[in-house]
Length: 77
Image (cartoon, rainbow, N blue to C red; front, side, top):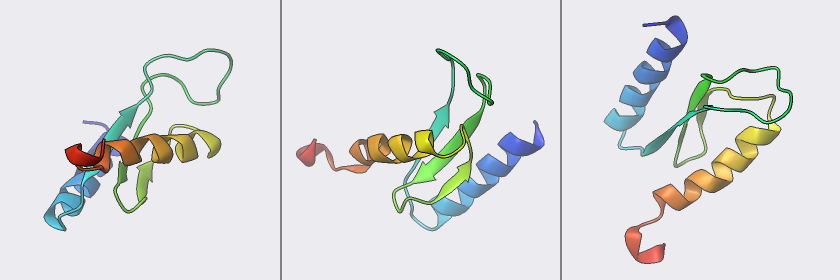
């Protein structure tokens, strides 16, 4: 296991032990140019804490926004 993904899973386990829900994000394809390539990954928890990175910042904000729908109870979706 690479160092990066090992660290993500250790962080995820820590968050789970704290009762925090999290989303695992991985880039599978790109359109246009990017300094990060497919295969990069990150996790984000329901409190907005991040581990890893998929871009320089602007994409993470959109991921955070989209992840909030995953954390909503089924009755609120």
